[in-house]
Length: 245
Image (cartoon, rainbow, N blue to C red; front, side, top):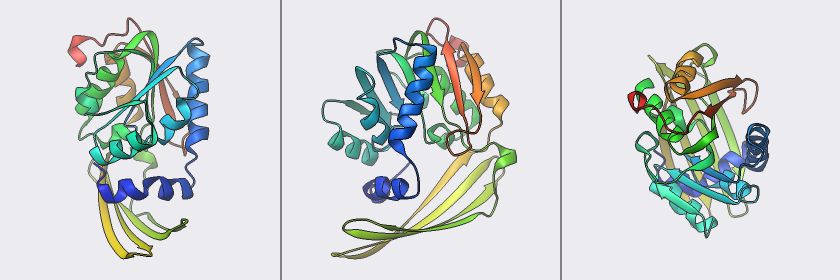
């Protein structure tokens, strides 16, 4: 779960590193409308600081978000007045309302600790869909595409601060560990913090099985979202089978 240090600089870091939140939001909206043209409501699960939601609220009549990190939710609420943004665990999601579309981008599902937890999350997201609603999930890299020992470095310059970021990946059985160190320099001084994130290394078939168990038909769209692809599911009656919850 992201802490307050990263939440503060997240938009600057990832926006500068090439993540185009408005373009991603527009692309996802297009995928949803191709399958449900009249879709008017959307829930973003693992919404982070709300950058996708900021674009999506201009494309849907009603949007809402949920994230496990209180720090991230605090940033999202500050930038999105009037939008409901909840603190919650996607594997235990229970908002008491439904939407025409539910999305989970930025590989949020891969932060879950196991395939079983991912299946529960897909089931809970499906349970928040209206009949024939659309579920869009961005996975982490599949095991065969993960680069073990990959090192990356970036210098990010903002209006009032400069940030250096270095990271290294390591495979730990069925998880990918990404250790990142940040140095943030501004007028008030220089500080350092680090983040150690674990992502599930799950196969394409395991994601597809999670959708099927939740009562969704599913297709996988490769070569989008930085090459990780997207799973796009269509709910049956909008209620996940009890066995998959």
